Amino acid sequence: MPYPWTTAWVTGASTGIGRELVNLLAAAGVRVAATARSADKLAELARRSPSILAIPCDVTDRAAMRDAHDRIIASFGRIDLAILNAGVWDQTPASKFDAGRAAETMAVNYLGLANAVDPLVAEMVARKGGHIALVSSVAGYRGLPLASYYAPSKAAATSLAEVLRGELPRHGIKISMINPGFVETPMTAVNKFPMPYMIKADDAAMRILRGLQKGKFEIVFPWQMMAMMKLARLLPYPVYFWLVQNVIAKQASEPEQ
Ligand SMILES: NC(=O)c1ccc[n+]([C@@H]2O[C@H](COP(=O)([O-])OP(=O)(O)OC[C@H]3O[C@@H](n4cnc5c(N)ncnc54)[C@H](OP(=O)(O)O)[C@@H]3O)[C@@H](O)[C@H]2O)c1
Image (tube, rainbow, N blue to C red):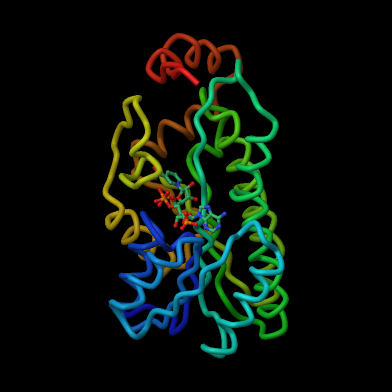
């Protein structure tokens, strides 16, 4: 089935899942704008296909994100699909919590979404069309050990996706939320703990595009991680914290900082 989009914007496109999304979309003939901070990696990506427009941009820079959005509209005419994928992972034991690092993660994983949603919604509401997909994580379902910056930022991303999904369809805008489990990318390459049911980045990108093509709101994979995290969400706190302290935290050992 051909993709229903002729133009797209992928943030966090220089590596990992974002890069694979750009490759798949461009291979299918979709004109795709690829943004991230690494200009060299984006330029290399753009050399692969004339359908790829590389725009170096930091998601934490609100003005730069608006400029990037406006440049894409100027080149493509409109953005049919925006996949807001840029993200960072910073593993720290809660005993060494650092507010500065919490702010850095929130700036990328939550405010980075907000900085894209702002210009996208304004243009899409006026046009009464478009599809915005926010990349969150299964880590957004519950507070997990060693994720004292990441999990709250993804819970915020999940909440934003739910709010937008409640309100924006009446303006003709589709909203999706993407919650991957473990995916083999530079982000997870640093992890020393076991990562069950890990999948490859190109597999993740295919699952994401399939879900978006079907117009799904919640795209979560693989099913084993979905089942575990959704079950974890249903557990009463005493049971959940027993599991965290006796099973999960023992596997995710505290690194030396
Ligand atoms: N891998 C997993 O297991 C997993 C699981 C659940 C959710 N996710 C989510 O999936 C998304 C993609 O992750 P990934 O695994 O593909 O990681 P990745 O390979 O590390 O890619 C992260 C991307 O985000 C970009 N980025 C980071 N900070 C940025 C900033 N300030 N401004 C603009 N771009 C920025 C990076 O590019 P530059 O450094 O060039 O800016 C890179 O392109 C993230 O939101 C992540 O939280 C991943």
